[in-house]
Image 1 (cartoon, rainbow, N blue to C red):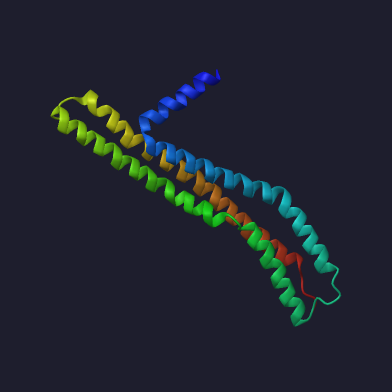
Image 2: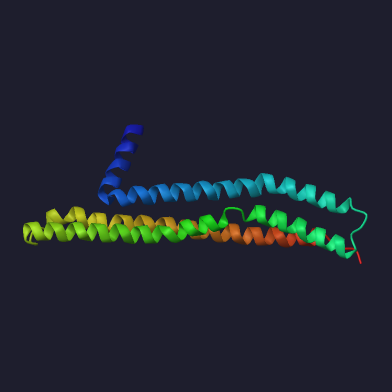
Length: 173
């Protein structure tokens, strides 16, 4: 069973060329970072948020200018931790379609090489180049779309968590 899966993956990467391997590696790294963010928000952030709120409520001075600056610093630290790898994820999302386009170009170059050698009339000989032109494009778009949804959700979640923290760290007047 596992051998059949690996053979299918190998066949798919052969039809897409070497650019497909790069796209696959990029998507893998992107999803590792996305899963890390999800795990952080699910487990690490909640603990840090509770500790920060407890630290703020334990302060006797929550009304002065100094207290307001400390509150801003607390919120900023947690916000930075929430958004830690989001710019990297967004950059990887932007790279996916560009690498797909590079796969399209390399595949079309192969098609033109075959046409130059065989005279352009043999469709079977051009099929490998056409698949190398279309499969990386599809893989890049699929990776970009999945990354866009996850990145947008994580960005929105970070913004919402920041707002909740700002509300929880109230300033006494």
